[in-house]
Length: 253
Ligand code: SF4
Image 1 (cartoon, helix red, strand yellow):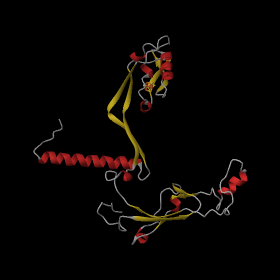
Image 2 (tube, rainbow, N blue to C red):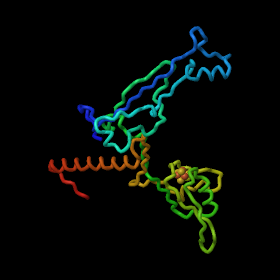
Image 3 (tube, helix red, strand yellow):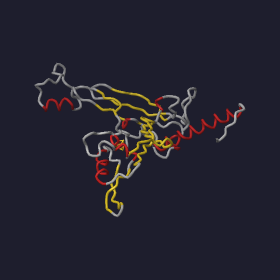
C-alpha cells in the first residue's frame, strides 16, 4: 500500500475501509416496572437485568465487529481479507437501545507526520556497565561480594591459587547491573564492608549502547530499530553531501 499525503484522495491503493454496525437490543422492562436495580435485589434479579432486554444489559463492541469493505481491486489483490491484528480490543460499550454505525479508513503513514502512526510505545537506551575486578576477589570476600549484589551480577568459580583450592568472584552478567553502587559502598562493622571499593571498579563502556524498544504492535521491534538506523544513515549522507557541496571536507582523523 502507498502512504497517504495530506493532499491525496483515498483510493484502493492507499486506504483500507472497515464498517462497524452494532445495535444493542432495547430495554424490554414493561413501562411502569422498576427499572433500577437496588441493593435489596437478589442475585437472580441482577443476572436477569444483565441479559439482553434487561436494564443493565451492556454490549461490548470490539475490533472483531469491524467488517472489511473491499474497495476497487483489493479483494483480488489481497491474498487474505484485511482484518485487525487483534480481535479483542474494546472499542466502546453500548447500553440498551444504543447503536453505533461508522466507517473507518486505515492508511499508512510515519510518526513524523502524525503521532497516530508512531509504532514505538516506549524506547530507551543505556550504556553497558563495565564492572572490573581490579584485584582477585577470593574466598569469603568473593562470597560476600556475590551476596551484596541485588541483581546477581557476580558468579563464584572454583580455582586453585598458589596450590590451594579456593573460590573467586567473576563478573558474569554486566548487562543486569543497574549501577546501584551497592558493591562498592562502604559498610562499617561488616566483614569486607570497608574496602570493597578497592577491588571493584564501576565504569560504563562508552561505545556500547543497550536499546530497549517496545512497540505498539504495528511492526516488530527489530524492524523498527533496523529502519531507524537506515533513516539515521540517510540523514548523515545528506548532511555530508551538503557539507561537501558547500566546500567542506571530512577526514577520518
Ligand atoms: S552496581 Fe549494583 S547492580 Fe551493579 S554490580 Fe554493583 S551491586 Fe550489582
